[in-house]
Image (cartoon, rainbow, N blue to C red; front, side):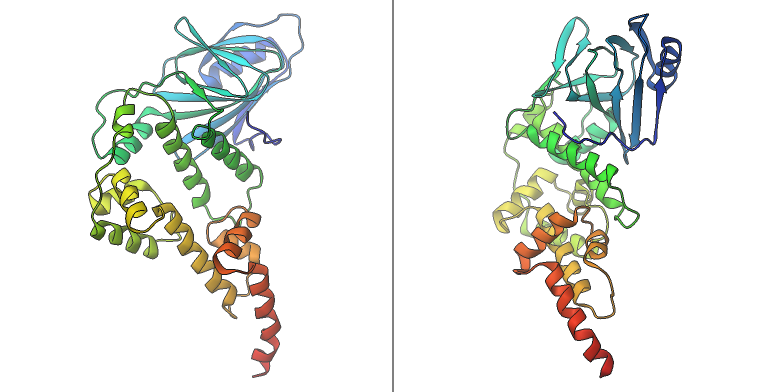
Length: 331
C-alpha cells in the first residue's frame, strides 16, 4: 500500500458530485464507461493526473461503490492500493488490489471500486516497456508484452516498485523550482525496470537467464560517458548505444570488475560535483541548492550519502567555507 498522504499534484483530472457529471468525465477523461453506481448517493469523486516523462500516474477516489469498464488501448495499467480494496476483471478473471498485492492489467478491463477504495494507477504505453526490455536483454521484442495480473508486494524484490512509486509521489508533492528536471525521469525509469524485472510476463525467461559479461573496454566507455554527462538523465538505452551490449551484461561487468553498478557510479560522480561546489568560494550556494543542482531531490538523503562518502556532512563543508570567506576577501 502506498503511504504518501498527499495525492498527486493535479496536472489534470476531474471532480464530480453527481452521477451525470461522473458519467461524462470518466468517458471523456478516462475513456471508460460507468456500468454500476448507487443512484441516490451524493458523490465526492475525484481524480488527479500527473504526466511523467513517458507515462501517467493517476490518483482516484470515488467515495461510493461503482464499476468502470475501460476501453481497449495500447497501455499497461499497474494499480496500487492507497486505501481500501478493489478488484480488476480481465475477462472473467478477478484480481484483488490490496495492501500487499498490485494488479497489472491491459487497458481493456473492468474495475470494481469499493466505497473506501482509493488507488494510484500507473499507465504506461506498451511501446515504452518493450523498448526498455529490449535494452535490458539485448534482443528485439517482436511480440506483445503480456503480464501476469497478480504482482505480490510482500517480498523484498517486488516491494521495490512500491518504494519507487512512493518516491515519485513525494517528489511530485514536494516539487521545487530548483529541483533538477532529470530526477523525475530517472525515478520513472527505475519504476519501468522494476516492473519488467519483478513482474511476471511472457518474456520472463530472457531476464532469468545469466547475461553474458561485457568487456572491460565497454565498462570504461560507460564510465567516460557518465563522467561527461553526470548532469543529464542516466538511461540504460544510452549504455546500450555506446557499447553495443545489453544493459544486463553491462551491469554484470560493473559488479564483477568494479564492485558496484553503473547507477552507483552515477551517484558517486554527482557527489564529487556536489563536494566541488560546496568547496568553491565563488559558488555561494546553500546545501539545498547544491543537492538539487546535482540531481538529489531529497536533501536529507543527499546529506546521508555525502556523509557516508566523505566522512562529514555537507553542512560542515559549507560552514568551513563560510568561516574562511572573510579572510579570503581581506586577502
